[in-house]
Amino acid sequence: MAIRTTPGATGPNGTNNGLNFKEIIRSSPCVFAIGVAGDSGSGKTTFTQSIREIFGEDLVTTITLDDYHLYDRAQRREMGVTPLDPAANRIDLIEEHLAELKAGRTIMKPVYDHAVGTFGAPVPFTPGKIVILEGLHTLFTPRLRALLDFTLFVEPDREVKEAWKIRRDMAKRGYDRDQVLKEILERQPDYLRYIAPQRGFADVVVRISHSKYGSALAQTRNVYQVSLIQDPMDQTVGDVDLGIDLFAILSLAERNFMLEFINHEDPRRRRGEIIFDGELGGHVVRRLEQSIEEQTHVRPIAIARGREYVTAVDVAQLIIAWRIIHRRIFLERCIGPNQHAKGM
Image (cartoon, rainbow, N blue to C red; front, side):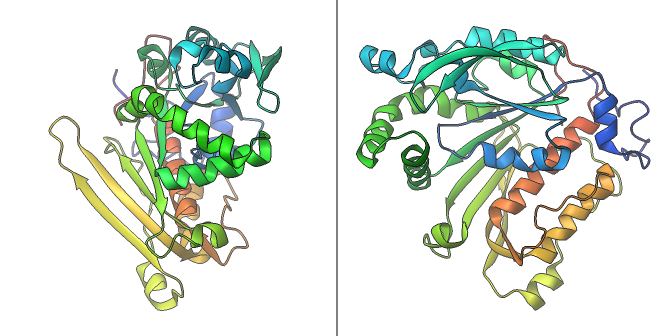
């Protein structure tokens, strides 16, 4: 379908004529769906956190697709299946519920309790104007992909993912270290078969690895190297500066930072990869926040507020937030189950 600026919301150059974008979303009949796929413990929530912070809990709601497991933990163990197997999940119900949410209707959402590995009673779930779906199979079927307006695939390196999963499952799910490591090994074949291929359908692939400045920085200051592999944007919002102040970096930097761009030569799909590593001064990232404020007239956007330094993860969050907002600005109309506003 052709993509044009939303009538009444944006001007001819793609700007929103001074209107508060948050209010535009609030008054719109559209429900904008963001899909985030990746393995368990891969950090999926991290890279949409900025959208939650910018637009608030009144507009943003989140569904975790673990609630749509078909079997509880004991049943999976008895059957010898992992939750990464699509057959161990109610994907048809996910599709049905996402269509209902896109139409603005309340669903009765299933509940899976990770603390005990069993199901609770379903609960009513009413969509906000922005719905985030996070899970193992978010991009698994054509119907799910058609219902989503923006998609991410989060892919940490194996060492990073193991460290995160050990920390999370021991703290929140009652596992010991050996249990977590055993589960990671058991899940690997299903990850490669069912989860990893979904990266090919994502608008943005997020890769996380240990910093080139030392893996210990992950523990002490949450410093990682982050790559964003993205499709080009066919439409742009006018007069929005996403520049990084190189003078400020070169004259004031006291910590290591790297910025790199790689063009992916693929005749089937043109993609570019931007790589961040290390830490930037908070005042530099503030420029990126101001750009989003100027584009949306939503203030303040202050992810870096009060912080002397921000990490590559923080910068990546802001870039992803800008891409999501950009996609929403050019959404022409509400999307039905068989329509999709892609192509940007």
